[in-house]
Image 1 (cartoon, helix red, strand yellow):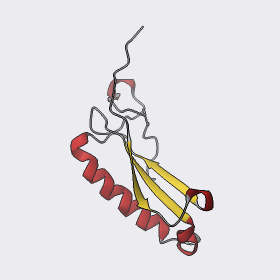
Image 2 (cartoon, helix red, strand yellow):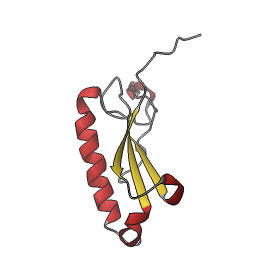
Image 3 (spheres, helix red, strand yellow):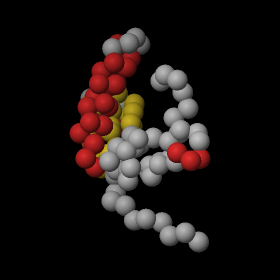
Image 4 (cartoon, one colour):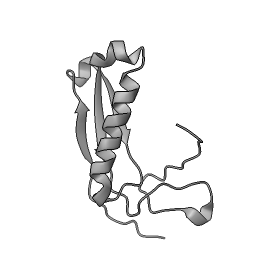
Amino acid sequence: MRALAVRAPAVVEPVQVTGPSSDRLDLVLVGDGYTSDELATYAAHVQAKWQAIASIEPLQTYRGYFNVWRVDVVSGESGVDNDHPASVKGAITRVVLHAAAV
C-alpha cells in the first residue's frame, strides 16, 4: 500500500461576495497545477476569468446573485496533466486537460 503525502489544507479566498450563501449561488473555482510560488498568478487568472465570464449575459445581469470563491490548492509540480501516462504531474486533483479551448 502506498503512503499518502500529507499536504497543507487548501485555503478558500473570496473573489466576489454579494450576500449570505443561503441567499446566493456560490461558484467555487479550484485550480490545479499551481505551485506555492504561483498562487498569485492563479489568483490573477481566477479574477480575469471571472470578469470575462461575468461580462456575458445572462451572468452580467445576475452577477449580483453570485458569490465566487477561489480555492488555493498547492501542487507539487507546475502545470496540468495531459492524457499520456508518461506526462503525469504531481497535481493534487489530477485534473486532465482534454480540450482544445476552454
